[in-house]
Image (cartoon, rainbow, N blue to C red; front, top):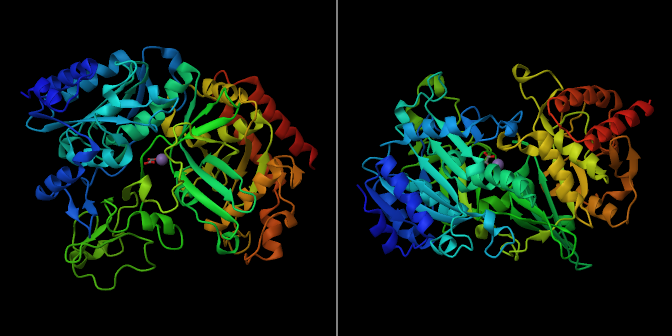
Length: 613
Ligand code: OXD
Ligand code: MN
């Protein structure tokens, strides 16, 4: 049995509430040792993990790990939000009573860390001194060293973050127990895993995985689910799965900030790390703040909405990251950055890593290359010859400070004032490149009806979206009607409100299906138009679903699109929109207590489309 008090005392951890919490879980999980972690322990932990073979060297100052083959992604079915109040049940939050979930998790975790070290990881999900700091402190307990290494990259980690709390008891209790991964029945009817946020007790209990958001509890479980609940319960802020960027106009000296949500596979990370296209780089600079989470609050001093990225690092999808799609991401994982790669392909001889899309074709000489499961490429059975080398959800984990265009003020506790909030789907035919929305309720309505097209016929009806409100569907922690009302309240309380917009980089030619917009760096162009619209420098063209750029208002210097292609991406397809409105109605009807302002926004858009005939 671990000597908890000696370990915590030795690390200078005095907070008595933390001590009691660690003692409770050390006893329950049966951990053999306790070790308190600060970011300064990174080099030692890396050395130990290399010595134990938990990670492998991937060139100078970079590392590689493989997860268990059945443990490669978040599991939405096994994720639960629990509270003591049945009224907290929503459509997407998979609500269960706290009184039922806590014993279930305790039963699974009891004795499950026997013989292992329990790492105590005190962390902060905010820049130090942020007005939201009291919602940001947490202590993750994990029995997996690689998880501790990830936490050091993804959050601010150290004893001093939780030892000086104004309210010593105000920290999120985040317990991670890996379990015996080979015996958990992942994806079967007897699946043993549970990923539970007991939101009204600010307690996170995750059992049965050591991968990503299942195990790094600061990120999704605290940074999104718990924080969204806290933001609602306190009435103070919103926690959203949003990227956050700055756009600096070097000519006028003005700086703008844009945040927004995109369902998976809609290009959020690439947009967050975008560099200005060559033709515009003389005048504009894009600064990176965050690729995945933003917390938003109204500042009483100047009446603006401010956003922070609560994270300290990037846990990015490796697939398709290349010099063309995201050069900043590649630079952020360069030698010497301390990057951890997970589940990409690895070369035993050269310590190189590779993933699909990194280069147009895989390395020609397969000597030494192993796929993400550890199988030598040269020895893969014939039926697997075409299988990807890297897992589609393989990742790189690197600190924000490694991103070459990270904003100089990314650590500013106040955050940055938000000029625009964008939502982006993936739609082949209906959505224009950008449509601006100036009304708050219509903006929130647009976020609530965000979605991505079902990619396979089996997943849905052709043209029907898989709705993903505000890109928060897997992270919703309280009911959607209340969520919409909270949005109206927080953004509505700002004297100077951001403009909203819906963007779509994925419009296709109706004939041959090619993408009509080059995307990537050129996505800066519609955003510049949006900011000019907000400044009153352009007027655009009003349509039933928002304001679209007039053709001569987009800065297209250096763009190869034909006039016909531009015509299509700057138009809306009214019959398809009318179909969509019917689907939206059904989608919104699921949400009890949806504010009347949202229904009015829906009816206004529907009526305007009707008149457009
Ligand atoms: C996610 C992530 O799962 O950011 O959304 O890792
Ligand atoms: Mn995410």
